[in-house]
Amino acid sequence: MKNFNLHYYFEAFKMQSFLKIFERTFLFALFSAALACFIGMCLALLFDKRNDNISKSFFKIAQLPVMLPHIFIVLALLQLISQTGLIPSLLLKLGIISKDTNFPLLVNDPFQIGIILTYLWKEIPFVIVSLVLVLRQLDNRYRLVAKNLGASTWQTFWHIYLPLIQPALMNAFIINFSFNFGSYEVPYLLGSQRQELLPVYIYDLYVQGDFSQLPLVMSLNLILSLFAIAFAGLIIFISHHISGGHNGGVK
Image 1 (cartoon, rainbow, N blue to C red):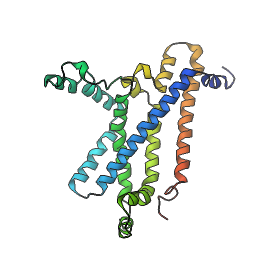
Image 2: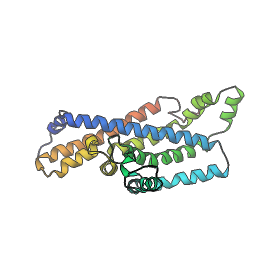
Image 3: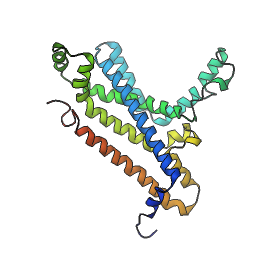
Image 4: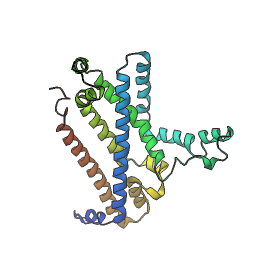
């Protein structure tokens, strides 16, 4: 342990359990971040076209979840949608379900629905706020010219709005993915033990108390961090080489 070597890094990539959990965590983080960005983008574009009190109120409300820590949302979901939470209890009293266990398992479930809901609750408003701030700075003449040239709504979005908001959208995706990939407390409290995610897997190795495993645990931590950085770099590279990447879409 006194000399630097790559033994434990190579050892990590020989562990089938680590590779399986790594793949699961990557796909899960990718899906939840992409879904949050897609829904957030749609809502941002929808409400940006309106200039009324409803749109302004929606934007203010959207900022509230951004300021709340994830642990607050986790506790709220545990109180609301667990099988002993407020919503199942209310449905039980109304006679809609006959017993608590009839309510679908949304917390600690094998499909990680509770984790996804937590991420979406937090990240969709973040995407909305990020994109609305960009959309408010765009020159409306782009849309008017496209309309005069006969462009459809889809063509206007694809050739004008998407290139203009692409850098902000990619930045939001990187932030969301990086958190989802490395988050520990949300998967630990809401996730399924049978479908462990990587941060929880690393923590479980650490708390086993086997000091001979500490170099491996530190290696796994570093692999997680380096992969997140490398993936973010890849997204930035892609962002700079597609429409809008260099100057926000303005030619």
